[in-house]
Amino acid sequence: MKQKTNSTLQAAKDFSRRTVIKGGAAAGAVALTSPMFIRNARAAGEINILMWSDYLPEGFIAGFKEKTGIKINFTGIGSNEEIINKMKANKGQGFDLVSPTNNQNLEWGPLELLQPFDMARVKIDKVNPAMAKIGSDGWNFNGKGIHWVPHIWGTEGVAWRTDLWAPEGGVPSYGDIWSEANAGKTMIRPHSGMLCAGLYMESIGELDKGAMWGAYESEAAMRPIWQKVTDWCIARKANLKLLWNDADSQKNGLLKEGVIVGQAWDGPPLSLKTAGEPVQYQAPKEGAMAWVDGISMPIGAKNTDEIYAFLEYAYESKPAGEAINKHGYNSPVLGADQAANANYKKNFAEAYPGDALSNLNPWPPQAPWYAKVRTEYVNKFKSS
Picture 1 (cartoon, rainbow, N blue to C red):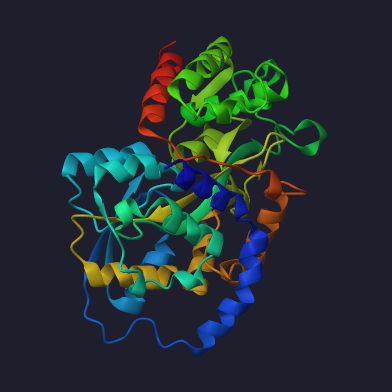
Picture 2 (picture 1 turned 120 degrees about the vertical axis):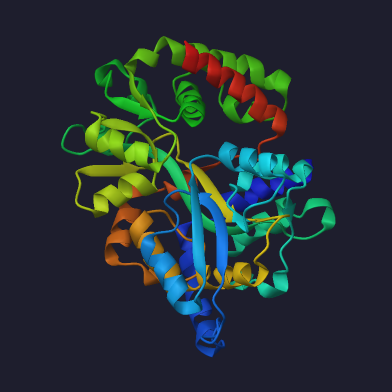
């Protein structure tokens, strides 16, 4: 399992916008010679999807139904814990597709709540090879086949109100969120905010370099590190305005709740920026946290043909590009960035200037014991 963990992490490190663009021309050539991927005469059906709340824009849902006649029944979620808890409670029933993040493989494998895809029906060659490799390396449970394919990738970094605040030197830091200068006007998501506080602590010498990644090695290694981080965060908790858990709460914090700077996913602030709001998002000095959210098929999935029709549509560059225009994240689909509008490309360049893409911090694969212990420390922080 250690070998799979390392290869999964390396695959995540390998992706960047450059690798997406590099494959775009080849994918376009294939598309010109490919048959129609969904027959217009297809009988109408439906598909039940449990996915992150802002990943299926109305235009994407409408375009899929127009193309296939298939209705999407969409249930939005805001965390990996929600997905796992729903699947546990329902014993893998009730949904055709769910959307785990790439680093959750060590938790999903033992649950046996997912079934492998028939990869002969998935056009996996249409996505970034490094991201596709995550599924084959880390999500081939018990040698039964691939249980995860990539869907959306993005980062968690720093967002701010450009009319109310500006980062010193033009590049933000996770430390800005905890500083006295911004007290009462900042936001985080508790578990990721605490981890990134640890990365800031490494940068100022309050933790050893590499401590936060070393915490993934064992519970014995994790506890003293997370205890220091928890104590540090509790001492500065009064400086925070908001604890968020989903896309809407991030947007509301920046627009309506007095937040001037905060830790955020890239999608919500960039969608606000696209809409003309005075909001910016950027990878911080310590490196943005990178993730790939995928698509998996629960053991209780019923609408098999509709599942593969959805994957075909999602892996076409035009609908993928139109979707990233709306939600502000990034697509693993080759050529999707070329199908996106100029505003998306401008936002991307401004969010990841200089060497920001080579400085990404992929979320490491997370063992069940790690999640349990982290929750313990997060609860200490929240209840303090």
